[in-house]
Amino acid sequence: MHTLTRNSMVAALIVIGLVPAIAQPLKNGTAGDRSSVDLTIYNQNLSLIREERSITLPRGMSRLVIPEIPTTIDGTSLHFLSLSDPGAVRVLEQNYQYDLVHPSKLLERYLGKEIEFVRVEPSTNKEYTVTGRLLSTGYSGQALQGGMIAEVNGKIEVNPSGRLILPALPEGLILKPQLEWLVSNTREGSHKAEISYLAGGMSWSCNYVALLNPEDTKLDLTGWVTLTNNSGTTFSNAGLKLVAGDVNIVREEFRGGLMRSKAVMVDAVQEEQFAQTELFEYKLYTLQRRTDVRNNETKQVELTSAKSVPARKVFIYDGLADQWRSWYNNYSYRSQSSFGQQSNTKVGVYVTFKNEEKGGLGMPLPKGKVRVYKRDQDNKEQFVGEDQIDHTPKDEEVRLYLGNAFDIVGERAQKDFKSLAAGRIVEETIEIKVRNHKSETVEVQVYEHPWRWSQWEILSANGDWEKVDQSTLRFPVKLAKDQEKVVKYTVRYSW
Image 1 (cartoon, one colour):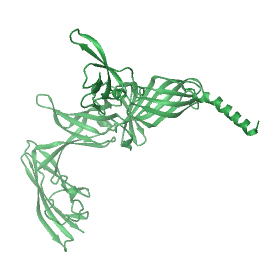
Image 2 (cartoon, rainbow, N blue to C red; image 1 turned 135 degrees about the vertical axis):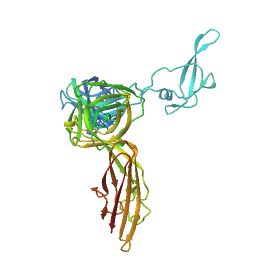
Image 3 (cartoon, rainbow, N blue to C red; image 1 turned 180 degrees about the horizontal axis):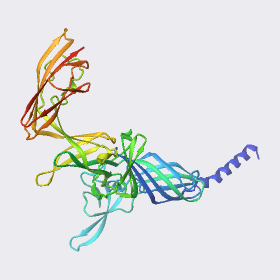
Image 4 (cartoon, one colour; image 1 turned 90 degrees about the vertical axis):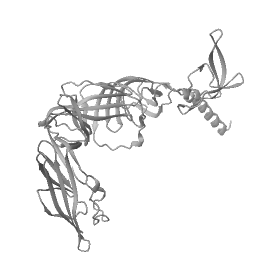
């Protein structure tokens, strides 16, 4: 026998010997339910989910299905670790399977195939079965549009009568989203596994309720965390952490959908429910107990509560409001006298308080909406306004704009305008009138904005004033009952 022929036969025998091993189907591992789950939720429609499960794996490569996975998972963020033997298990491939059972998907798999309709004979009221071939499902995507079309006994029926019967669940459709892994394992048996991943569909926000006392000098403040779960999965007995701060996120990575939700209010208890700690440059709030976070549910938990926080009511008149911002330092407008003549007459009313420990607060306050109430003469709570606050560190002041005062009026007018030095200097005189029709004395902070150019100086003013910043002046005005006062000043711009 030639050497070449003998070598070819040996190679053939080797290949034949390997074929059965290659053709053998993979063994299946098994994964149990979550034994523990912890949620870290950001207020940007993002959550980190860390769960522990018991898995059983054969030695070598096997197929492992992880059930009960959120529909909004970011598969690229997954981290897996065997806590029993970290070096033994590796995930080689991962498939996220979310082709869930739906009438449209079921019917699509039977297009052109035989299906059955169970009908009722009117004369005998007995059921009988007819067989037909499905020609059209009647669905466009998952929306029902038009009607089903089937060929029954050689004739075409639109919206065929009867109860539709399908022989089996088509391959590939699943009841709940799941992960399917190809796993390599060197230690046969049971493993305690840790799985972490990012998912969308869960978010939290903070809402506050404040109750003013009759004198508007103190308020009771309660902060509520509102947690929404539209991830497609329920998390039972979960540890819960909330991250407040402006975390940078590539939002395209996360999917989400609109789902109906129901609200669940969790009763407040006297002790603090959340412990606040630091995380990088953000704030971390940890719920001091475990809780259920159900799918399609909105849950509210008390974050903070304080009584008799010192507060102050402030009136602010800003005659230009925010109009000046679009003109600020624009050379096209700086010498045009007609700009800045418009007058806003509304005087804003604000409530301020300091987020400090001696006032009963002192916890960093996450951004959110603050709704303010006050009792009327019948001792009934009435809504008096709301505002949005940003993330507020401790020892910082909170200022809430609640609306406009009814009995205080402002009036602003340009009294003089001069262009000097070949247009390189402008002098402008502004007069502001403030009238108080309330039955008590008030103080109004009059705000003005030297907007025409960055280089300016006040030539004259008929009262005290303060430079708040480069574009803001403040004139404090105290007004007795039914009194009017006038603020007048001249500003010079040069360039």
